[in-house]
Image (tube, rainbow, N blue to C red):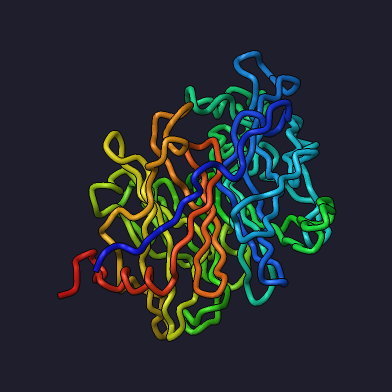
Amino acid sequence: MKQPNIFYSPAPVVEPKAGCDWADTMVLNPALVLDEDGKTIHMLFRATGPWPEKNLKGLSDPYPIFLGYAKSEDLGESFNCDFSRPALAPRVEYDRDAMYVNNYKGEKVLDYANGCVEDPRIFTVNGKTYLTVASRLFPPGPYWEKDARRDNLPDWVADDETPVGVCARRNDTVTVLYELDVDALKFENYDSAFTYVCPLTDGALSDNRDVFFFPKRFKIDGKMQLLMLHRPDNPSRFEEVSDVTTPSIMLAAAESFEDFAAGKAKNTLLATSKFDWEEERVGASFPPIDLGNGQWLISYHGKQLPDYGYTQSFMILQERENDFPEIIHRMSDRLIYAKQKWELPDKFPCPCIFTTGAVVVDDTLIMGYGAADQKIGIAKTNLTELVEYVRRFDSQGNIIK
């Protein structure tokens, strides 16, 4: 059985906008959500540009990362983008007393998205729509040139030994959860579209991203719990994992969203690097798709340099009684990767197609992807054919005879 046909945008559907200070350098990694009309696709995309007025120490101009909004009325063939203002913007404050936000309970809490909001994912949990973003307390410098995460750190972080201070000194990624009002978003009422909920990961423990949820609760250890996919840089920092130090896919279960970053979740390792094209890392890509009969399609990515860059692939999970789901099928093939000229590297040395959002219309899987960390494309394939192909492989990636 040959690989399923995948149709790619022949040119970018969204590109950086010259003269737009928050999106003139790169746009990438879109989240997608399907409108109630069944045909309009709403997109939140990652974007950045230099912000010299927030250069704190003269080391480099910071590049705060924003989310922009776009929509398609032709099932992803083209998108109309609102470059007039960001949909979601970091506050970019350096005074700790100014780094606070009101959460969904009306409480004043530290805003872990103060520096940037990266790699959005949109999903539902128990019928309510949410957004996750990979965030930093402070904006990085030109991160495609060097490790510039710490070029704009305020002096107070040097002496702060609290978990917040540790996280701030590293300026690692903390994943933040928002409630998302899609109606407000599509009418461009951005101030009403996003409600801060809480951090989902502990920035003092490990850089952690590629975080999102299954749409329902699972019975695990006798309790109906939320189930979260996440990708820590160092899984061995979790007590349930001892021997894996490369970025890998984990599952976490907890009774409330706040429990995940508070050390109250139960974690288990789901998948680590196995094939040559995923030697450096694996992480989940876009939110799970329910296949029925307790099975879930999981999109994920692997990275390996210098031979491959990023590859997108798939696995299928099976629910278990009173336990975490387990992998029953995992593709060993490379399926989605940069091929077209416009998808190939420019600023970054790494070939990269990175899917962060998908919708299903009839039996067509429509995926949004960032290409070369600078532009956005759409890929489409038949969902039934894709699932049939993934089922050719066992849990270890071997073809089933």
